[in-house]
Amino acid sequence: MKNLSAMQLGLRFWQSAYLLLIIVALLWAGNAIVGRAVRDSIPPFTLALVRWSGALVLLLPFAWRHLTTDFQELRRNWWQTLLLGLLGVGAFNALLYSGLHYTTATNSLLIQAGIPPLILLLSYLVFREKCSFGQGIAAAVSMTGVVTIVARGDLAVLREFHIGTGEWFVLGAVLAWGFYTILLRWRPQVHPLSFLAATFAVGVVAMAPLALHEALSGRTVVWNLGSLGGFLYVATLPSLVAYLLFNRGVALIGAGPAGQFINLMPLFGAGLAILLLGETLATYHLVGMCLIFIGILAFARATNTVR
Image (cartoon, rainbow, N blue to C red; front, side):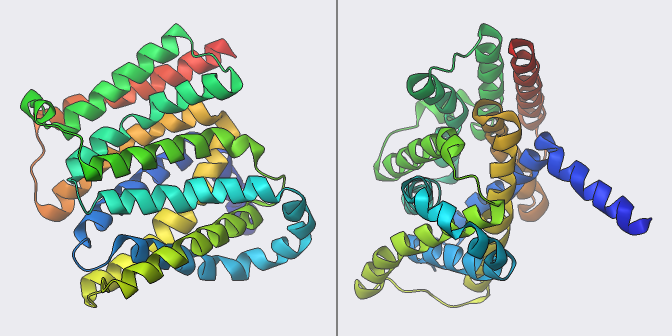
């Protein structure tokens, strides 16, 4: 009975898209903080290479049996796997980590706040999926909450925002993630672990020459506890765990609704800063949190109404 209860609990968890996507947002918020924190000790492409190499090594023992079964299906659909791996694993992470070397976490989060509406726009342009008026309003409310938290309730932060080298990198990462999310419908019909391992392998191959160029250019890792901890974190939670959960969430509720949960990243980022860095809880945190949750819930309600 205990085993049966555990299995039932695991099944319910796997079917709960909202819970899965909330966990994803928390793990990715931590990834942004770590990426910014280790910028002086780990070059961006090296960080991305170690991230996906480590995640692949950890994943293979669990995925190997499924890979042998799904190999022919992956081979028949090689271009979908290659495209999704390049967009969601290779391009997104290389561009984001590069951007965090040249811009602040605040600017990065402001730009990433554009991911949910971008997903809606790309879904319409590529697949002609229309966004209802209610979905549009809900997305705007949630995005307002994001901006409130990132700007710390001060419009002067927004007025000082400018597009520089780092911001262009992050914009490229946002565009890559938008396409990855809407194109997940093209993923081969294989076991989730097989698909994850295949896309991680694409990311490793894509990052290897870029990391080698960094090393040959004299940009090497400064080994310390911080860099070791950074490598360990990015290779496990925001990679192996978060990608598996995000792909499952998109499969359950679709790209548009799943994309709205990315708006939770700055909220969780602020929470982590309060817990780990001693920052205080301010009124703008509460206002932004309310707006984000209202927007996400309203979007889900509008989506269910449309269906």
